[in-house]
Image 1 (cartoon, one colour):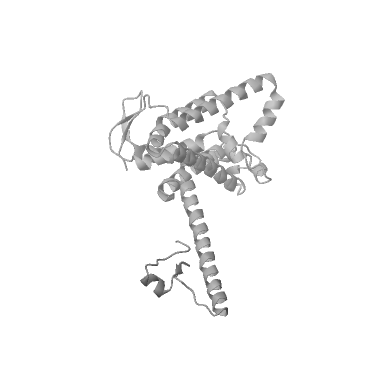
Image 2 (cartoon, helix red, strand yellow):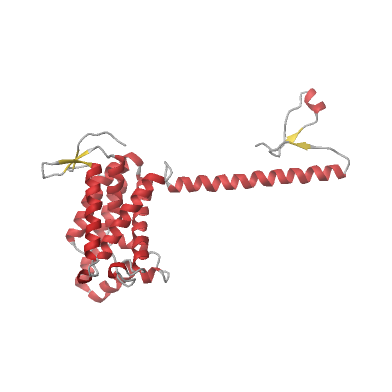
Length: 283
């Protein structure tokens, strides 16, 4: 948990990952707009291919788990998402570095998508697997959740409104609003709108899970540590096995050799007295 200084929504720095995420989102939105005017049929086909449609994902279109987050439904949709990404994401990236921050953002984006797919197949709130979802809100709300946890007592100045509120209360209020919105959207008269709120809640959930349970240096670093640990353990096992086989082979030829528990060769005691030392494999 960080310090309790006031965090003003003014002009934070454009950190590397945040800057590129905003550039990519803006470029895609511009292409969407141009394509919509130039050829609506191609625009519509592109939307179906890149937006998150659960039934398509279940048939192998797994790229939609990420690509949907770069599409937006309108100008204000992308403006609010990119503003929140900049305001809150820059602080996280300065603390974590661009690699871990990007991993976290994509983790929340994919987590929001998986939550949407899971709920879509339950039919709760009238959500259908054929409904599409677009927007970076899942990743952005994951950022807000992380900010609320890591900077719980830091006050946020809600510019231009001259009111400050602690980050933990800001995020708690946000979660409450999303829950109420999802419940209201489940009303049969409002069906179809709830799918967006499900993605929002998924982003919040996966943001919480990452901050609470992911390795300190990130999932990719933890996975690489596990991989190299397993690989090295396998090589040590092979070395011990080879040492035992060699001992058996030498005994069959009336010679005795010894290895320690790591498979390292142990020279005869006489050699040690003459200045010999351990040689062969090293652990």
